[in-house]
Amino acid sequence: MKLCFSVMRPALRFASSVCLAAALVQGASAQQSPPAAPTLRHSPYLPVNMSQHAKNYYGMMKGIDNLSVRSTASGNLIRFSYRVTDPVAAHLLGEKSATAYLYGEASHALLEIPVMDKIGQLRQTGPLEAGQEYWMVFSNKGCPIKPGERVDVFIGSLHVDGLIVE
Image (cartoon, rainbow, N blue to C red; front, side, top):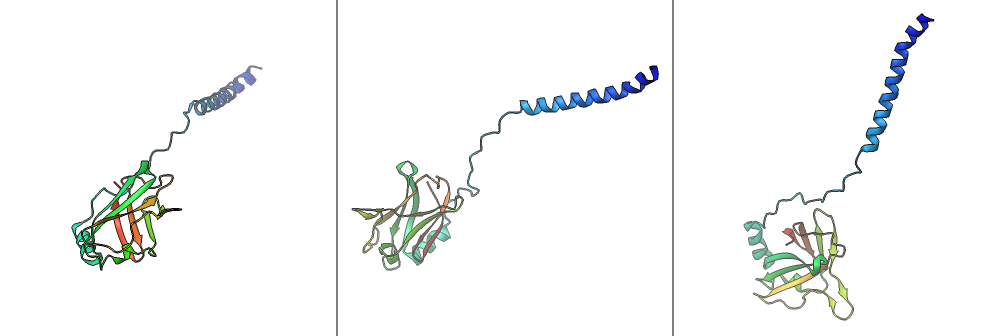
């Protein structure tokens, strides 16, 4: 009988160590904290203003300057404003038939100009005058585009790339 007990002693040690290890694993998994809240996603782009070369291009070729994009109405609207330097080159901006879109590069959101029943599109149209500032407003319902994000503006064949939402 003594021989049987001495042979079983290592087996008992092994079995007890397996039970202890299983209890430790279960206790460690039960003590883990709940998953962390998701972190806010930031734009991968650096907040750099438009280059002087781009400003010169839009001024000479497209007839506009002082381009800006601002978040308004608690972020529910985004206002694109510009100043006309050459009404002939910028004629596309004053046409009602030219569809305008604002595209968020990081969020991949495509915004349109809202149309009100009695007012119409929230943009200025008609004959353009040199030196005048004009604007158009895009609906940002649900705030997919945040301040600091780079956006592109498409108005017919006019493309303005890399503007930063203020």
